[in-house]
Image 1 (tube, rainbow, N blue to C red):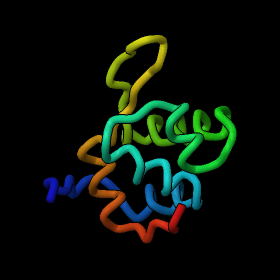
Image 2: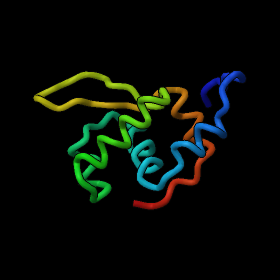
Image 3: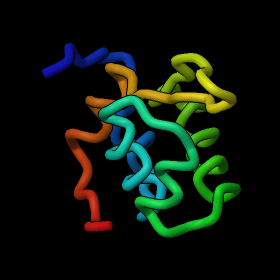
Image 4: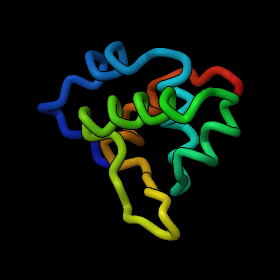
Amino acid sequence: MPEVDQSEDYDRIRRKVGGKTTKQTLDLLQNQDHIGSMKDELDVAHQTVLYHVEKLQAEGLVENTGEEEGRTYYKITEKGRVVLDGMNVPAY
């Protein structure tokens, strides 16, 4: 389990990013992924996934890991793992 930064308010972050699709997006990003793959998995529009990824990035929960073949890849951060560990992720 990642080390918990005691100065962070993880409960506040969980409430802020606690929507169903945001939780599912964070869960999918435990493995590096790109928007196109996630939209298919979640059965939502590209813009919807991008919105949730950007929301998670703003909180430092996911990071851009680079581009390949015109696709931008993302992955959960250690902070994101701590937040995800305290969430109940709905099935997708």
